Structure formats: C-alpha cells, structure tokens
Length: 126
Figure 1 (cartoon, one colour):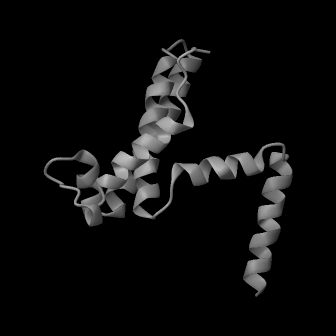
Figure 2: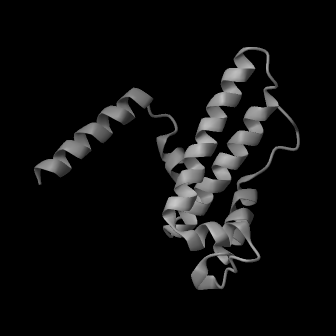
C-alpha cells in the first residue's frame, strides 16, 4: 500500500465542492461539469454511474489478463465521484456511507444479507 493514502476528510472536501455545485447553491452548468450533470437531473448522473461501474469491471477483467491494475483505481475513482454526485443530489453524504460501512464491520456478510431480506419481508407485510 502507498503511504500517501487519502483519508475520509478527502471525501468530505470533495463532497463540499460537489454540494456547492447543486442548483440550489448556485451551481453554474456552463462553468462546472458537476453542475451540468446535476442540472440535467438524475438520469444524467445515474447513467454515468452505470458507465463507470462497467468500466471498473472492464479494467478488472483486463487486469486478470495482464492489463495495468492501476486502471482499476482510476475507474473506481470515477465511479465514487459520480456516486458522490448522486449522494449530494439526494441530500446524503459520504460520511453516512462510511458510517454504514462502520456499522457493518465485524458482521458476517451472509448474516447482513439475510437480515436485510427479513426486514424487507416484514416491510412488505405491514
């Protein structure tokens, strides 16, 4: 691992920039890529999330066959960035995602998934 690993405060700083680009905060679609995506609405940034997720998969598959593994990092960064735009649009933050990951730490993924299914079924019966 690199010693210059980013910290959660990097996500917070980026989230602040993205939030400043929201239409209600005066984001100018002519001056900012983020503001342009937000101005176009969810379909625009959700499409980008799908594209970036596919690019992560392609980079990983390429790495399996001798491709440059660092391309996975670049594609994941693009994916996270566009996910952060979605979070901002919906009034959510990266800190909430990190809190959810912290909540899940030490919990079996199999148990977590089973619990979510039970809770979803209980919600359907109410």
